[in-house]
Image (cartoon, rainbow, N blue to C red):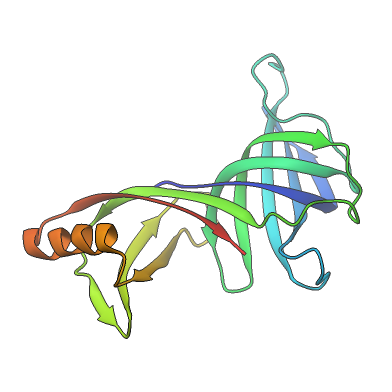
Length: 177
């Protein structure tokens, strides 16, 4: 399942190295989750590949440590951070203190063969996500979705999943906060 994210984050640190074809940047990004709780943040381990010879099709704009950026990319979830392969970066005119706390917007598209489980007042469905971000990074993780069993539309959809007992294509869209 492809796992994509968009967010606004602060560039805490950045190192770069040059390979034969790319400038590779390793970035530590910080995403605010709540405006009134400065310690409520998520760390992003971001990697960019900027072509050395062809800058015309590059969606990674120049940035530096201390900038606030709008980030798009593929991601893999870990226990306390996310690994991101950036597909687009744009510098925004914010300081860290003024940066909005938007969380991380995610979209996961794929197929599940799982059965929907009743857990209390919720219906739960788990998705196994396989996303290739880098050779050395773990690339698989689980996503658990829940919704209130009283939501008729979603309840009907999950009943259909259980009755068909076949694979179901799903698009999960949400915000990590």
